[in-house]
Image (tube, rainbow over all chains, first blue to last red; front, side):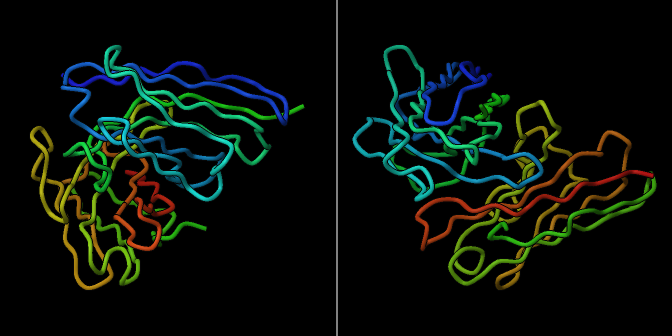
Length: 122
Length: 110
């Protein structure tokens, strides 16, 4: 059974940093690209970032480019999102997601984590 | 606002059918597969339909998807109270080089 267990959310001041984690199990982690998607309060879903299975390529939405860094540790089957220079508009529930197929980024997701709330406020 | 357009709400009575629409453009729905997810706040979104009209194992055949041009639809027949949730459409967008989503449709079973 595929499981994606998230941790690391919380309250942070504007300009601060936070790291999200997503521990995966139930599939060959290194064979699949992974991504982060967020949902701001009262809003729809927004893709944030993605990483290939081998960590050879990373991809970011313009809204977070230069501030967020996605990474993964295939030996620990864990996905990360390092968020720096956080802004109020980054406040959202963040979901990690497994790509439906393939290690290269280019498809939608089949399994999602439960989400973790990030609140950026002074 | 979201790249894909969905009605914010839909409703039906138990046993009835309901359809949720999703409109996009030639850069996303027009040339790529459509996916549908069901989401209850506080839980993980669940894949309902992939590649326009395919159901993952375990998803009842009460749920069906279709696509025509730059629009797609999710049809739910035989509504049950447990179908109450938010439903999101999604598609790959060639200009973004990533997925885009609808704003979600909140389904109420009256």
